[in-house]
Length: 309
Image (tube, rainbow, N blue to C red; front, top):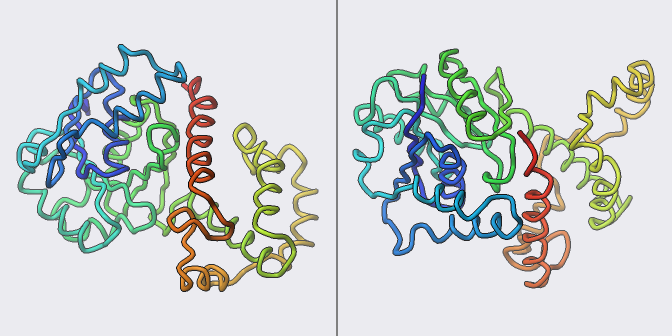
């Protein structure tokens, strides 16, 4: 399936980022549907692009080309009527997503692919109210989507293989690194891994083994340095599975295995300490530190991903 028109539903942080991602391909036109088109709809995308231009990751001509391939509308029928690929960036409310896909079906082409950018919800459940569930697929982008290469393409119980293949091809065509998630499980692949690390990190803090800043340093300057070029299972093969088995046989019984959210996390949320939003979470943050952290992340991602093909 040749995908030439992509419709993004929602003009928030992820929606604008996704529009920028798809418009990177010169052969794709992108329509962003928003219930209320803002006075300067291109401003958030232009800000992202200016950062890329400033870091010489793209040229001014490439920036203008991307912007020229994106349009905005508040008309749902006009947005989806002739789209090849439609992706929603709605709030993480199951019924909202179900109703959206149900209502889209009579408005769009029968062969249009319906994708959801949910990060944790069941794709099978999201598709439950559709008559043609075979064209519904999960496409979990990571924030910021214009910088993080990973996209998890998730197969629901009824997703057609042709839809999976077309979606994987589209992600590659816009410069992403798609991975195929063959089973529709909560958290898919990368979020399951991430939350397993978070669970252990919080347990270390709760048990007084180390404070939050130390936990972050241990990851940042230790295994985190290897992960971009050495996967954890590749690392196990490198050191030897016999050694891995010996280590696991000793350590796994000492690892956190709770099935409830962290007590520390609950206490912080109840106190209103929400992290960057409030200036205090596991650590305290000034506005300058928050700005520096966000900028440092984006500049790092631009540098390490600009040569990824």
